[in-house]
Image: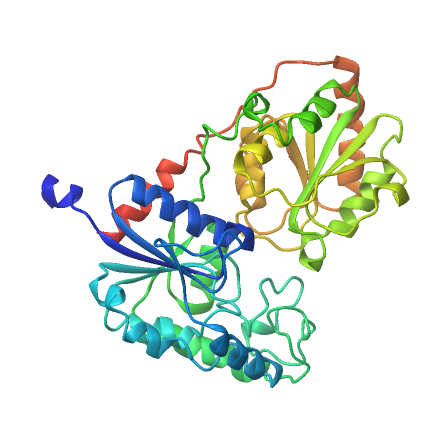
Length: 405
């Protein structure tokens, strides 16, 4: 391919559940959209919803009527079955002008039949941000392995995206496998863990393109760039002599995030030596918690989130099911030691970071964290460094552009 072709503009469609407020997968879609635009490409990002609102780049995938019909079908057990969104996409001039259509998280957003149909007309890339492509719909199957043969009597009925009590999981799982067989999609996985699982189940080996992050935003000195809105809280954390323990998730009520386990471990830490810092949507009452706590809630600004992470000392991560979580990249790039359970692609991130530790169970995790807290406090304040592999977002962008072309 000529250098001129390599530098030519591409028309790219990104499709995800939400904007960055919708969780890690939607954040990747938004960040990739911004990065591709900065690289000179024409990009439109279609989403089901947007906390930041819609504009000429981020546009609605469909309207309220379609959402109501999808919700009604989901309650009847037909989760993400009917491709209500497909006619609108087929009559969208931007879809037909696109060089590539890139799907991200589609659970509760559109039908896999839409992905399969479009792949016969256009070049389609699908980044697998979770295991829902292989199951009847659950984001992570956790200990359940029924999906390997046929889903039934699903333990996650009633939990999003399976917001129903009618068990049609056997049919849903088979429908998804059929969509994979008939589609012409190029699959991408951020982790080798999910790529291997997808390969074992379907015979298709996804390309591994790791998630990245903005290293100019997330680094040990990010606290210097905090906004006036968060400056007081950052100053409070910097002046504290306690061990600042970060607990972060987009939504603490998501049972897969394991926040109940994380909070129980936090309670075992020395109460007069630890300050627990919560970042993410939650309804936890600071006054009722046994440890010293600072609840910051959901932080939309990347700059402020980076500043707050950079003044913490360590992070506790007890998720029950993950692929390649962005928050771990952000933590180690900010100089934090991460203590985590070995789920999904977590070990792929942390094994190369000498200060972090992956533990086999919650008891070992608690013991390792308490030991690290004692050691850190005895050493006093030290200069922080990320001491980790190159996490630059540009690597991910180059990987996707190479795949698109």
